[in-house]
Image (cartoon, rainbow, N blue to C red; front, side, top):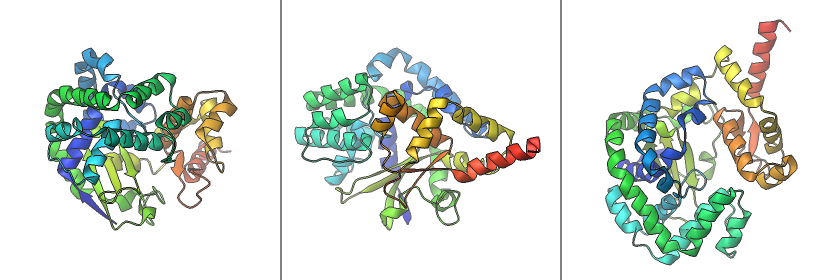
Length: 345
């Protein structure tokens, strides 16, 4: 499987993330990271805090920016452009094209975005309102998406205006890490992380059986390693996004030490999160059902799930379609072995 790096598509995808950066607090992300991992991204954290401070005055406006599952509404609209054969070279050109899409394209992008939130369950016949109601979003987020469904063209233009407002401020910080992104793109090895000789068996990308997939590299403060797959697309059905140094972040803690042990124990010690983890490793597990069983919101299930994935306590299952996640049994066994050794159990 060959990763085909695209510098200009990487830039556009990153700038479409930029308005969301003010919502994510660095401290929230650092909670699941060990000391070694935090050191890797020390410089990136400083940039993150600077950006957060700069965008603070725009926080109310930026709170309206629509993010689905890993990717935002405008990302899906951008993917529609690529499928049409339109391949803008700059974020400015992309914004111009996005602001002039048809209502059909806008609604199709909303449908794909909501399908991603619903773990890929694409329903072509159901109304957008019905699909929205099926999601586990918080009420305030559902309201934002409802407004997008009610007035798609106006929403597109408002979202594009947010990107256009943020882009000039974001660009100097983006440019500062240009060399790091190019080096990372040149040396990144998917096989070191996933595959027969990797740390994990699979992320699911290789199981899609494509010889080539688009590879987009993002700045390190986005701490991203995810892919979007849409079998309805012919041009770029799979796009893999990775932030600079995410490979070091994933590979750094292969051996259990006190730092990793205590960090992981902190994550798993939350009673509700532990119950979510157990439930997610069962066949046919659905966030909505887990939320009802534990008397929590769907958003809370998603929050705990992401924490567990970031801490590498949950791994994607690519062998059994009825089970989405496996517990990281190697990590759990190593933790137990460390406790047995330290306390002579």
